[in-house]
Length: 392
Image (spheres, rainbow, N blue to C red):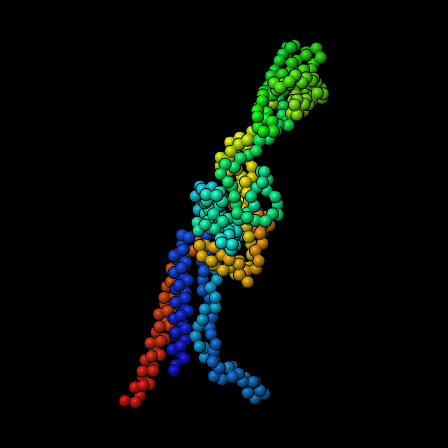
């Protein structure tokens, strides 16, 4: 039988594979974070009809004569270039800019994905569309322990920001050095105990014009006022710059004593009541930061990312996920923004990196290649027919 017949058959198979890969790329043109693939061809074994001849003194060398036996698929490579950004506005949509994969778990198997469209389940866990659990590090008491074991991102309903006892109240502004004798200026602030109960802390500043000092009287309604004297040198506080009342230190170091300005007041205190979770956003390092009803912001969890020595060696597992293979290398876990890992953007998704113009061109190339190899088969058949017609 003619060798060209089988070469044509191998060409049909190879170009059919190219059509399959191209068709799959086009089908996934709108799949989140899809990475297109391309087919690599190589020739198969060649039949040696005449070996190479050795060059001599009186004769030149000759090249080998070989007849190829067709084509085969050498491999199917994945294009890992970054897809375009699609803004969604959903705070559970996340996009990796740079290297890295989200880590998920389903039925005990660890998988990896670039598709960052997540949702909450009934238990307060972040999941993919197919129910895989997003992995990372959950916070405990408002902090995330570094280097811990990854697990599902869990934020239960009714998450509470704990109450914090007030220990410091900072006073800032100016007390007028040209005020009338006996002038009283009051400033109030809400402070909190360890369980979040509030009380009003009031500070009265009374001017002693003769001494050029301000008397301090601090009270929170739970006992006798605490008093002190605040003195200045050239408008800078030099004495009596702190007063302690029921565990709360009044810091007066930022108070000045220049003329004509009356701006003194308690600008902040470090306590807070308990608060319920209102919303969250994601930072560039993958930390989910919660906003609570008491005005506090606390980390809730941090997403884990994985990188591989050879990401092209990952095996596609369906549902836009991958699994590690023997040629991808073991995953290296880390956080977004650290060395070797991309950053995260909230409210956005990575689009498919399929180039439609290139894929339609590949369709034409594959179709013509298939057509040409089919012509080899029909031509070889006509030759065989001529041979059988030699004897009639």
